[in-house]
Length: 155
Image (cartoon, rainbow, N blue to C red; front, side):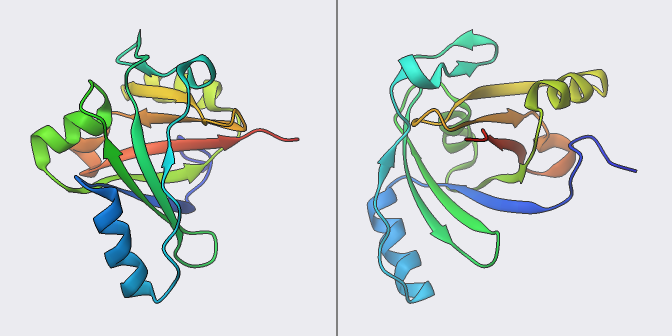
């Protein structure tokens, strides 16, 4: 059985944080690795972020990424205060685990399959460098976190 997203390999855990600069320092110390750079979400002209089905040009965040093992990444996300799944999580829950992510192929088809199963997409967009896309599924009630689909485009 392939499952709804055609994979069971988790490649990322995303944490919502209030201060990415402070939090990444702590994680770097914990891992014993250099502090990674902080990156922005990218320009709306590229990301085309949609939140709850509507254009969300102001929905942005700061991020830092740690390689946390083979094919596993820890993502720190600091929302910017505008309406987004990131800000909603921070407002409702405070800091903590926001999502687990799966590397997928064919995001559109997977989203259709999930919708047929009653799982809605709450936010989606392209990577800031346009090399792929993400989609967050409304799964917190059943899975206790959001499921993220990540698709990197082939070059």
